[in-house]
Image: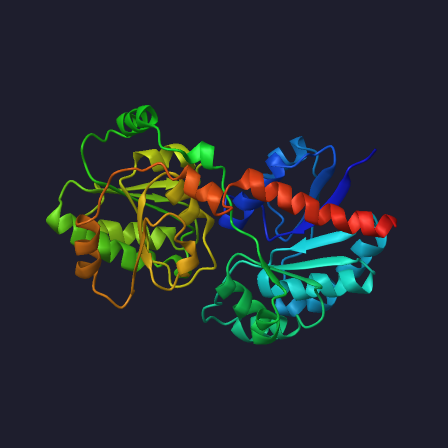
Length: 372
């Protein structure tokens, strides 16, 4: 018997939060019963592409979604679903742009159309009017509404859907066992990095405006003034990396700030950290914050992040309107002890093995109903 195939719609399968969450589920589902295929919207290879193909998944490339190519994009979507009638479930993760994909899926008669919200804001840029149009266009295109948090669901789907209890909050679960604190690993990684007893503050995220790296460096400069040996680990890539590197040099922090790029050993790097710092301007419910808690880290984050993200009692929320010195005082008065949080993650359904089973059953139900 062939496995049922689920079409996951993403931008590109790089090592971002939602992509990592999807791979957590994909690795743990029974792939003899369910297979994930991916519709991506970038021409370059994603970091997870080789693993997807190895696991039996298929990858379909579509053009980048831009205001000038809507007509062509709609045409290509219609052609795709005419050719691929095997899909009974389309699960779209591209926030407001999910409306376009699910419009074509509805037109093709696909019975399960999931829009999944991973953000709680759009920010302001030149594309904002078009993104608001796409969000408005969402109406009646999905027939299932998923979100990483209540706040993210309200933002994308609006009050009417949110108040009707139609939104399923699908937890951004992680492999709790993989991140569990290990003193031996901590010592090995810190030794490899040339770190002894220094305070290590970590941050993981794309170098873009949303992640607020400029303010993060202002905080770390204040930390450095009180704790000159402190180290900041910055993990990720993005178009603002070069400007952040320049600011590090201007602040005279080059020997204290380490840039790591995209890494596949995040669980190990988190073992080396003493505290996780995350002053984002906006988020949905970031997977990396769940990972940091799974590693037993104290997390100090902006209050723009939903309080739903505090699964373990180890997250402290601070306004980004507070001064860098205020943030620094909170950081330096924190406990840097790693704690075993695996039981709390499992109890609150943030372990990916449990959530993968729930998601598999959800998908399978549509095929069972269709067979009847």
